[in-house]
Length: 193
Image (cartoon, rainbow, N blue to C red; front, side, top):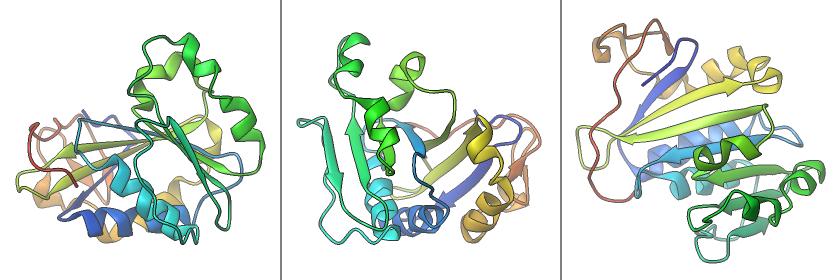
């Protein structure tokens, strides 16, 4: 579901998802948190790869599923976490999230919606869902807290090339990339992007 005030975009390939993420990375500030949500294979790592590229990370970004956390150097340090394998919310404390947020970098957490009670209340939620085509993805951005909310106009401009057209709307739809009501997400399934 897309909530009022969220921005909705559509990509047609992993590369396009990465370009959208790189565009968003230009807005990144030290201490930013991005919560990445979506089914397995929806494109969370592809999004992080593009975001990293947008912050001038030159080394390959891979999924930290088994290492839980990886750091990459760029214009800002990029901390890439994957909490899929954490069984208890208490294990989140062992990741040192507050320290990562305080070190002047950006933190992206795959499966971050699973640990929302443990997160600060200021982040950008990036929800990726499968679209109609095999490689199509719907990307919904929702600002939670003041930091990203202050950048709403810039977020709108950054996703404009991928914003859902009015013809794509259903049940309330989108207007210039912002929602006017709730829109159901795409179906589950499809290849990894």
